[in-house]
Length: 261
Ligand SMILES: [Mg+2]
Image 1 (tube, helix red, strand yellow):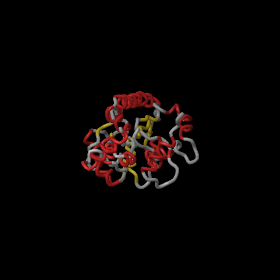
Image 2 (spheres, rainbow, N blue to C red; image 1 turned 90 degrees about the horizontal axis):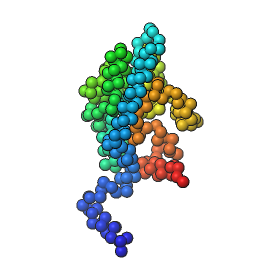
Image 3 (cartoon, rainbow, N blue to C red; image 1 turned 180 degrees about the horizontal axis):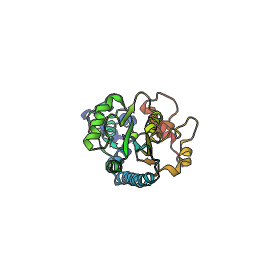
Image 4 (cartoon, rainbow, N blue to C red; image 1 turned 180 degrees about the vertical axis):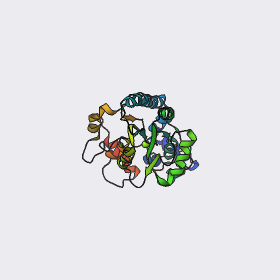
């Protein structure tokens, strides 16, 4: 009897739209509710972010003692989930059951409404007080340039100007932009939520990312300051087999790839 009652109950609710938010089709689009909730509500997310930037400050002091004279010192930082918290955008995706798309993303960035990742602003202001410049190396596109500057400036980030904002001009590879910064500056450290924000070694073709991380373990917290981002990143790519997969297929492959017992 119990088995019958549940479908009947759902059938009664469905025309009212009361279960639209939790239908299986919507969940299949993006099943990362826990990741977004963790970023928005947990103290642990904030604590880890503060921890990252506390390490950044200690490391900066150390690097300043060793910095090579003759070039201006700087730090290179990513923007999304490193300085700016875009979890409201991800929350919208979960609630509306939509996959990432450039139109929705631009609608969000155009608001210039993202809040700071905890600790980020304090660290970059501290760096500025030590005459250390900030270069913002982000894979936002040039279309988002003005809104991005507006968001950073509204929050009071130092060096938030066109000269220091290096966006993607078609390629997500940040190495060329890092090399450009190195022409005139010492890069004392880098901050990011994605391993590609630090170096291209981590997602090398044919290499194992986890082994590459192990090989670079001394760099984390010293030269590479890593911020938590449970919602998205290059780490997702290594989960999937095939190209042009829809969200339902990605969801299926994520579950299939889990290591159970
Ligand atoms: Mg990022």
